[in-house]
Image: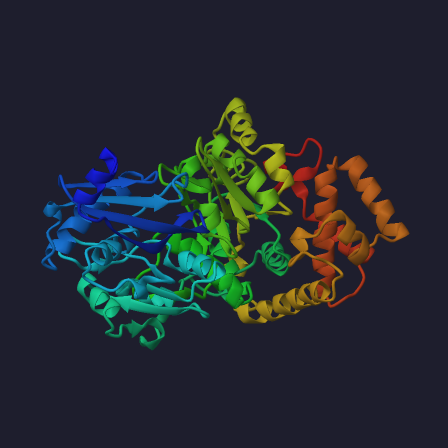
Length: 531
């Protein structure tokens, strides 16, 4: 005898279910998402569950229209889609392709077996085209880490996807192509695409175009060699911006690991074009001083990396630093110290890497001419100048290793025939200094990749202080008011100075030059005095 419930079950049409795999990104962290589809005869509807954000919920309309172009009408079915795990927030449009393919399997339009182990990424247009999405590279990296070996991505993301090894990536232009692929027809491999032009950045000139400013040129070389943050101060027209834009020309080429990391960040931010693959040039970011805290550090309703992360492994140039809002400047304190940005929201937390080489430029006062001689005299009131200087807090200043003042360039330097040293020449010394740092890391002497990241314990091993050097540091601590953090940073710069000379040990002369490079640490000093 059948129970009432069992009798009802026998009269209902059997449920048709299927699943596909895609990837959800939280910053650069990838999580596999199982797209579960249940299609049944009954009251028509399309229900999407699994903590989807608005863009994901809108996939119902896109998927329905794309399937209609394949001759499949969902009005006869009750469709339920679950994005598992259900407690993981899903955002973005990359789920469309996986949802559509799982529905095709559930309706018996394509076989089930080809979806096993296949990762699907792509947004669908209303006409069934597979369009580009953000974050394909970090998504594929995460899929590979989770053991996936096959993937299908939009053709527009092919240049980005072909840079990754260890996973068979196919590219598709339409949903129909993907459906035919699931029935056995081949899709083009991403690696079969013609090699794309690497993303190149125009940094604007060579160091030999700079006239005079020998102290600033020396500071650029030290900053590049040890990845030390740099602050340049001086009146307008002294070449601060010109020098900053030539800093990337002194840096060594990125390693493949660094290039992949930078490309992944730019992919999540949507800054990669379809014509370019890996970002090979070190990024140079120069945001305007009106940017918000979220634009600098990252954030938004759907969290995106900020300028400090987009400049990872490259340069972040903050021109007119004191024109930035004070809370925006102070927001950099923790990222500059830890090398990452953590953005906390009520339901989730996102972390982006952030190890740019910071180079900042400031004027001594709001008008820029305080302390200078000539027809352009400063007309700023004292309280204006004090409020202006107060925007640069001590904690931020402590995190900048090098301070250099720039004076107006003389007519002799501007009109003289002497040719300055080129970027290539300086870069050769920088590369040699970086090689020494890598060698110490390779042999386990340090864990830091660059001198700017050396810990106190590592400094004791690679930059021990002699009796004379210790005495000099003690006098500097007493007379110049150096903080404990500044003490460590002076030793890091001294180690870089020794590397530039090819010296195994750190001498008194290196300590002295490193102390002199922190002019703003003097007790009672002002921007005007330092410049």
